[in-house]
View (cartoon, helix red, strand yellow):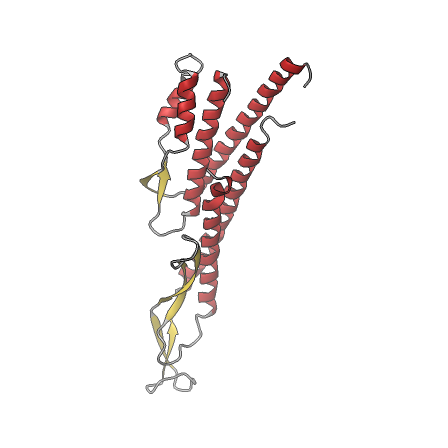
Amino acid sequence: MPVESILDAARAGLAHERARMEAASRNVATANVAIPTGQAAQKWAAVSAPAGHDAGAAHLGRVDAPERVVTDPGHPLADAQGQVRYPDVDLVSEMTTLMTASRGYEANVRSFNLLRSMMLRALEIGAK
Amino acid sequence: MSGSLSVEAVRLALGMLELQARVASQNVARANEPGARAMTVDLAGIQSELAGVPTGATSIERLRTSASTVRGLEATETQAPIEVDAQVADMVVASTQYQTLTEALNRHFGLMRLAATGRT
């Protein structure tokens, strides 16, 4: 078994948690950004890599999201009925994701360091 | 490989601990995937074989065979959700035992070197 593949799971976990954190913070940042007419409501999410990339590598992608409608005739992006569309971002859910992703990232760092220290100790067997 | 029963037993135990740590690491990596279930690996056979070492219930050949098969063991999925704290704790335990065994192995080889060369 190749030496470096032991750490693959921890590295994939780190990438996944970082992608979740990035997605949650972008969603929170764009919660009050109006959607131009004709565009579908979308939010950021951590998705699996498309074919051809490193299988299992997480990265950011846009997914369909529910929208909320606010009556604001004076808004530049208001439609004919004076309605403005925003992505319906559940702030509680996004903040929870931020926290769990942060804790998950720390746990993956811990797991990475533990495996690395085991490998280093194995390399020291019989050395002096 | 070595002709010593204790060295082969330590080699098997190190392989088992590395596998446990790797499976726990994979569980930690998947902990926040929706619907993820904890993976586990069945090491009861290996553990009972290691328990047979002090009583002489096993042999060097059997230990060597087990050491080569332990690397190919597959993890299976359980029905339990992944508890990150428990998985990290399992990794810490496996890592500490791994370091203890490598230290014991180093001292064993140090004694062999002392016996063979008269120097440490």
